[in-house]
Length: 371
Figure 1 (cartoon, rainbow, N blue to C red):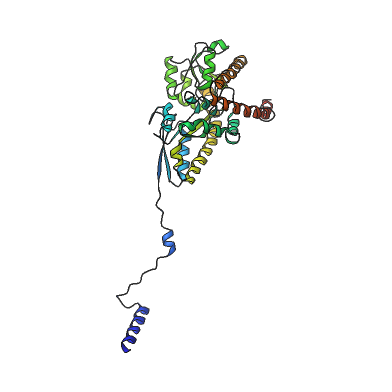
Figure 2: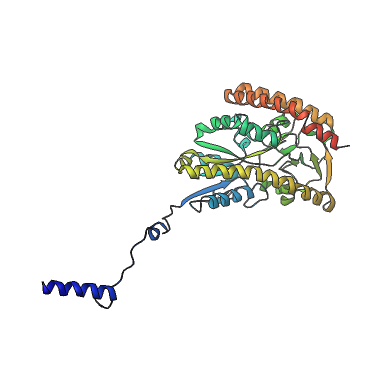
């Protein structure tokens, strides 16, 4: 018993005083020290190819800002590298690139794919069609997005609205347009249904990437070209190789851009990252329109006041004839393709309703503001 009592005394004494060098004090592991440790972050890398030059004003900056937003909102879990036209593939090859899974995303305009899916043209802009505000209403609250998804489904692509340039300009011409006959024989860069309309009046429409326009106008390969509007046209220097700048952009009254997403890649993302991608695209869709609304004002002033550009309006008789032919061309094409016919009927129904409302709202105000 004396042995046990001495041992107990030693343990209590040295344990209390900390004088026994064979015992070391160890801090207990707290719950906070475990949960506060930084989690292992899985980083997903995507590539996005565009149909525009790298960092080009408006069009080129939209995908850059999108990638930044996605990175920030995902806390770096989804990183998207943006490639300009020609870096990974030609400007008009991005649709196939996404469809085939060579890239996860692209930024382009849907009317470029009319040869693959004629109905795609309605999701960018059609002659004498809806404005940017009206397009956003149709796409997001009028059933347009569901139709767009249906058109791209066979290609394994998910579309998202990716910005809008607003009302475009009518284009650059090296000869005046006084009558509809002045289009005859005119070699003009104009994609989509606008090109088909001009073909009916004798023009020779060409679908050409934007970065090729300056040299084509300079060498005479083109007699005229439409691109976007003042800020982008100024950046390309088109005022240096064409004399007349016409308005309005009857062929593209509200040009909607698109984000193309490979369906398999999108569905492989966690649900929260899918939401990040959709939310970022929705923000950029409005951001681009805001930017163009502001930057086109100052760019047009530069073109007219500093560069001496001759600004001209298309004659009313010319616009009236182009509108008549536009309705004819669009109606005929809609009859030839069932999917295009389905989209056309939905688009037309929404457009009729919104135009009636805008007669007593937007249009009425614009007319009054002119006085």
